[in-house]
Amino acid sequence: MESTHSTPTVPSVKIGHSPVAFWKPILFGALAGAMGWGIRGQYGHETGAMIAGLLVSLVLILLICPNAPLLNVMRAAALGTIAIGFGGSMTYGQTVGLTHDVELIGNWPALRWGMLGLAVKGGIWIGFAGAFLGLGLGGIRYRAIEMLLVMLGLLGLCWIGIRLLNEPFDPDRHILPRIYFSDDWRWEPGASLKPRREVWGGLLFALIGLIVYAMWRRGDTLAFRMALWGMLGGAIGFPLGQTLQAFHAWNPEVFRSGFWVWLDPRINWWNWMETTFGAVMGGALGLGLWLNHGRVRLVDETSKSHIPLVVACGLLAIHIGLLASVEFLSLRIVDSLYDFGLILGLIPIVCVIGDRGWPYWILPITILPVAGKTLRDLVYRQAAIDPVVGWMFLFVLPMAAAVLIAVWMQRTRSAIEPAERSLRLILLLTTWVFFGLNFAFFRFPWPWVEWTARTPNALAFFVCAAGLTILALIPRPRTEETVG
Image (cartoon, rainbow, N blue to C red; front, side, top):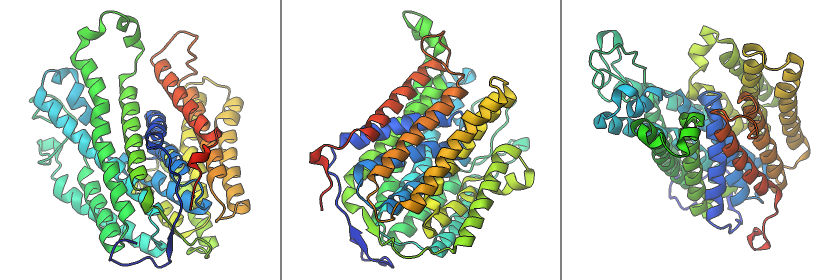
């Protein structure tokens, strides 16, 4: 490594990289982020964000290091997928509201403050994803016990950050933190408000702690650089996406003439904010990894797992059980502990680092909440689909495909085999599973029937899915074959 600090416990080797044109990671990263983050809006904060994390990670790894060993890159993709969920614990609805709520139209200080809050929260959110994606590709061998201590340390830093930056919080007495990015009485004096508790300060402390540990304790330059690129993409993408929605709210006269008279009622501006945010952050991560592709290194993955098999399997069952409880049962005792991004990601992060099978299980883990929420909404809440049909096509088939591929990769694909063919298959599966489930959630807004507020977004997601399909199916030009 280039750092003079502590070296990896296992020698790392620099691998050959595809001299892919710079625009490809930007473009395809943006397509993956736009679709993934746009779909996230229908499915929730932490686990919904993992959709975008998985798609963006797969795309960038496929483009930058397609001939790297499968286990190495699946571990990196899993880390990026899990970590992007951490930021989902932050409340941001009222922060968005500061920039476009009817009561605040024309209030420029509120607009500026809301945009600043979105930049802070977006930077923290995507910063974690970049840091862990880089951590998986930086050639540093982290151990399971080490990562457990790191995650516990991040939780401690988060607690300190909340106490310092997100306290005091006593809305009944109108006492709020000094730096507060949600709606409060500064902007609406005398209004009846319900301020939301913020945790961005805690996550900021945790992110800084992670960066300091990775860079200065372990010499992980790639994790440090990708964290900065993630922070940049989030800090630009979130307010930029909201600019569209705020402009619509502040300038209604623009949308009362021409083709907008027909189109405006059929536009979900909130979802377009999310889609734009995802495109920017995916493109930023793509550019960051392309600029730093020479720092991608691999560690020896021929050694045994750090975590005994029985323990890894037990932790997988525990995590899936707790995840299902948080998503579908709403048990107070479980929610109070597991419904927070850093805690939700603790078991998966440690096990992905320490076990050779866990990186592949990130596929069914990511699909499970999406399939389950689609089934719940369409079959049980809306009664829009027959239960037998719903269970089969919305849950059983997507989960079965994800589980079978995870088992197949774990049992029949060599850990040192080049990952390209497997990555293409996984990208195809996840792209169309997420698109299909979301299309069903949108109530099948076919463009040849009467348009709804879901139709434009569905068309945009289809374009993104088509682009990712082209990436997955078309072989690389010979000029982009990996060398070295």
